[in-house]
Amino acid sequence: MIRKLISRVFKKGNKASGATRIIPFKEHGISRDRITPCALKVTDGLQHAGFTAFVVGGAVRDLMMGLTPKDFDVATNATPEDVRHLFRRSRIIGRRFRLVHVMCGIETIEVSTFRAAQAGEQDGSNADENGRILRDNVFGNQEEDAVRRDFTINALYYNPATQEIWDTQNGVRDIKHKTLRIIGDPEQRFREDPVRMLRAVRFAAKLDFHIEERTRAPVASLASLLENVPESRLFDEMLKLLLSGHALRAVHQLRAEGLHHGLLPLLDVILEQPMGERFITLALKSTDERVKQGKPVSPGFLFATLLWHEVLVAWKAHQAAPDAKLLPALQMAMDEVIYAQQKRLAIPRRFDANMNEIWGMQPRFEQRSGARPFRLLAHPRFRAGYDFLMLRCESGEVPMELGKWWEKFQSVSEQEKSDMLIADTLPKKRRRRRKSSKATDAAPVQNDQD
Image (cartoon, rainbow, N blue to C red; front, side, top):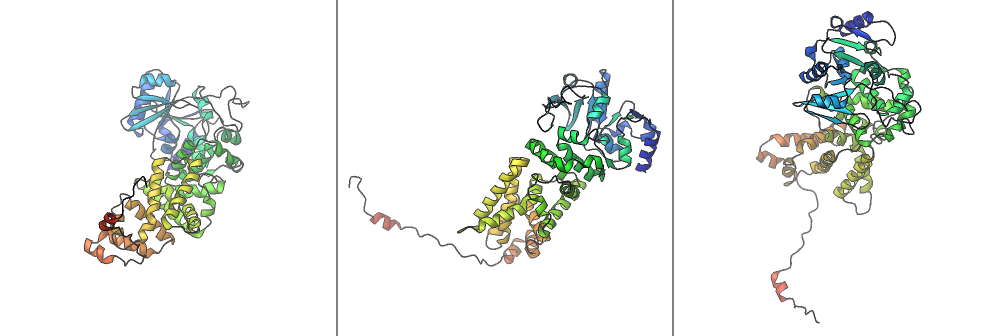
């Protein structure tokens, strides 16, 4: 049904290549009540003030495909200062390109001013040595703004007042053919912003589109440009990719496009190892299912799964050292892996703590004697550690019997828990003898002057 609708819209639109095709409501069927109240407040407010305003980008694309958009962005010919003046609960953000966030309760609408090509873009004076644009605050009109967007399917503009869709880059056609096509010269556009390569993978995985060959061609040779992207921005994009609901497909596509190196170190090696591949596959499948069911996903848990086999390798290496002890060796391995990862993805500290706790609990699950299981069960992050253990069991890393024991231990009575305990086979620590008070009293007092 959706394909027939898109096909009808494409056939009836203006046929001039590169010209703006204005598609009326009767052809696309997307009414303004599909737009959130906050987005309507922003577009209506701007239009009443005499400005042009559209809902733009991914929201229009998703509506065309019959999907529910996660958020709504607005594009306008009003400057950031104009927008800030119109909406009391708003703020200007950004350096490379200034945006305005307009807040309505818990919803935030991102408002951008139409962009245009600026002096210095063609000769490279406004970019670094690799072509990445450093400043992008030249404003233009709607047609110029469409050319500056990344992919054709994201260059669609919806006017809630008229309920029309404006398409200047044949985005409707590419939605119909499930094609991801970059606007302009692929190499130049990827050099301007290397994160577009990650976005291409994310959109292709999320929408089940194929990346057009001309768009795909330069990716492998330009992958190293991701090293020039600020770590925080790289982390944000990777998080979007992993929480898209199609993480498994996206990770495999990252590898196919040669974009995994440096993002998640040794990911290619992990996916070639049977146990590592099973573990990663199970973790990503679980994440995708939770996203699709609307359940929360912990980024700390997710990154703990993706980096676990690196921790295992480092842990084994530290345990091989003379006089190495189990838990200190694990702590050194965790610190080593997180430090290496910080240099690329800049994982926030709050996630580091979650990852450390999940990893640190794993040896404790094997201790099923005495008071240890009761203390572990009372740990505030027990559930995350237990879910992680079950992934290890299902992948074959540890015996399934261990996971089943802990599954039962959580549900039985206190007496049954005590009956389930396993005899302690660990050697008992020798307790140091305390000196008696008599021996202390009998000891001669040493004179400082002696």
